[in-house]
Length: 440
Image 1: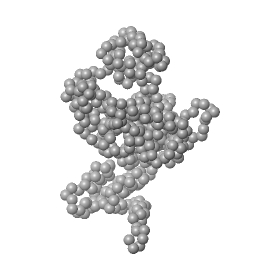
Image 2: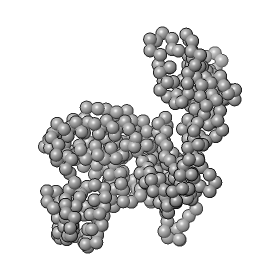
Image 3: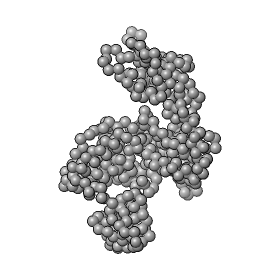
């Protein structure tokens, strides 16, 4: 999806969203593991990207970086964090050249040499002139991502735009397709590819409707901005799993004081970093819808390991392993996760909880939610006021937040240690609401 990595910008945006400007420049740079100069340079670059995304708007309507990142319930129909993917899909020096290539192939079929002549004649003088090898590399990239296609199989190859889908649809069909992609991109995961398709369809609608705004009948409440950022590594990992390849990366634990470290090529400026160098065999990628997090489950020399995608930087694909050892590790993982609420591989424990029916409500939303979210657990001993829910899971760490989210409508019966943990937590919460003065 992208020709170069953008770990630094991802972590920059993640921190900006989470801290809402609570850090100054020095604190921000220290947390990222970069210099203040690099921090300022990255911020300028993101502002340039933002201006490019909103360049069709009048000056007074264009967004500042802080305004664009600021949380809003209804920004998800065109999420601002997606502009990073658009801007970094190609290098800055390639953008004008590729734009010229695409414009030249709009409506005509051309060879690499003909495209080279067009680029050489049209590129600004301050940009380096490309050679035939560079043009062929650009064409190979555009063909891989599906933007162009070869019209003839015999040499010399001729290329044209791959826009048959949009061009072959009527205006009504294009609107219906846009609405479908809009719904799926905003409600399903992974979502970035859908947002990119949605963006292309929207531009096609705008061209057909002579600049009038495309109809956008839906608004979405989007909770997890980090989910889109973490998808930067998702497709690389899925591809590595399909090809049974190991991966290596620099990992920053969520508990680490730093979330990024620059990759210095000059040994004079090499510095210590808080990350952990990891080489591992990826087996599965899991999405936690409750917290909006992606997890990588893999196998290394010390067994099954779990990593949050938000802590992965400098991701590289390594050599492939044999089919037999890969299948053996995959079977071992599946066996260990048989009773996992999400990704826990601890010892199995049976959890029993009493859920109370809501009073004064015709709709038993408590039972409906348990049936919907309770996975392989089952309900038994149902009475007029409550029912008993039972499930066997690998440890209680992951199921505890779900049980706790029911509040007073849920009472854990077994195991005893989980019941005592929840009692202690509720007592601690209650203490926060005690009066500061006795006469209040």
